[in-house]
Structure formats: structure tokens, C-alpha cells
Image 1 (spheres, rainbow, N blue to C red):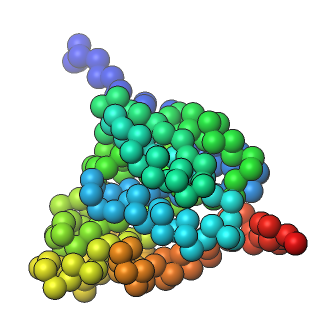
Image 2 (tube, rainbow, N blue to C red):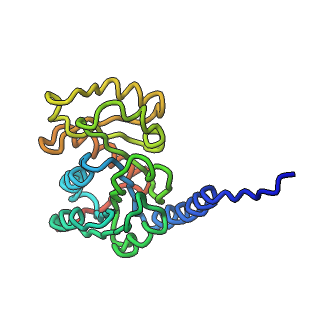
Amino acid sequence: MSRVKLIQVKEGVLAENAEKAESMRERLRGKGTFLLNLMASPGAGKTHLILETIRVLGGQWRIGVIEADLDSSVDAERVAETGVCAAQISTGGLCHLDASMVDQGLRALGEEDLDLIILENVGNLVCPAEFDTGAHVSAMILSLPEGDDKPRKYPLMFSACRALVVSKTDYAALADFDVDAVRQSVQRLNPDMPVFPLSCRTGEGVENWTDWLTDRIEKEIGPRNTPLNPA
């Protein structure tokens, strides 16, 4: 008989996090607040997509943003300039967010007064996919300059998300990127995941993304019955 005792630390951590995340999801649902977890590699355009989403949906939903970074508040400051409430989580070197970290951001924002909270996760295509943040939906961004081979290199991320934004399509003439090849790779990993090619610089394709997001919000928390600024 083996005398070695195996302790499954990772499994225990993930299980505890999943329980916390589910509790948060239910809490937010009860308050009519939708949480979107947005993941991508550094430089893919997470903050730019958030700013465009605020531009399109800001008149329909009360929006807040939680920004996560290793050690910076630059993105949160850009979001705050739009007038949207933003909270910054500094991970101190950690390459992902877990449910407890997100809960701190939620409480800093004051979730009772918000319909949509967008969480910008740490820029990474590996670690963030492993941790349930308590979000109702996770989406990811893949930019044209990164290349079209990423679904094959990082299958967990593409499997864990419910939507893929292919960003920076205005680089199409400069990038060797095959959108159809990405669609085929994604189809094998995640058959129901929609793909939204768009450019935040030109605005092309952005409303396809925001229409999908609106549909998910309304299915989760219901439509807004009164305008944000009634006369």
C-alpha cells in the first residue's frame, strides 16, 4: 500500500470558487444585474470594446465596469471618462480573477444601481478560463494581429466562452488571418458559439455584438420597462 498521501489542491480551490461564483450569480440575478466576463490576451482590444459597448448601450442600461490588471489603473481611468462608474482590481501579479476578487469589485461599484456590469479580466488566454467569476456570460476577443491559430493553441478558452469577438478587422489588409478558418475551429470546440467580426475603430460590426449582448441580458434579467432618463 502506498504511503504517499495525495492532496488535490487545485480541485479543492476550483470547487470552492465555483460555489462562491454560483452564489454571486444568484445574488445578482435577484437584483436584476447582469455580469459579463470579457477575456482576451493583452492588446486584443478589451477596453476599446467596452467603450464601444458603453457608447451603444449606455442609453438603455445602467452600466458599471470592473477593470482588472496586474498593476495599473489606466483602463479604469479611460472608462471613468465616459461617466460610467468603474472599479479597479489590482491583482498584484496574479494572472486571473476568481469569484472572491470579483465580489470585492461588485461591492465597490454598488451593484444595486446597475443593470449591466462588464468585467475586464486579466489579459491572458490560459488562467482566466479556468476560474468561474460568477458572470452570467463569458465572452472573449481575438484580434486579427494575433493570428487565426489561437483556437488550436488555447482550446479551453474557446470552449469556456459563449461568444467570440474577432476584433481589429480594419487590419484585414495587413494581417494573414482567415476568419472562416477560425469559425471552423471554434465550431469543433463550441458549436453554439457565435462569432462577431468587428472594428472598434470604424464601428463596423459593433451593433451585431451589442444586439447579441442585449438579447442575453433580457433573457437573464428581463427588458428595461422604463427609460433611464424619463421626461
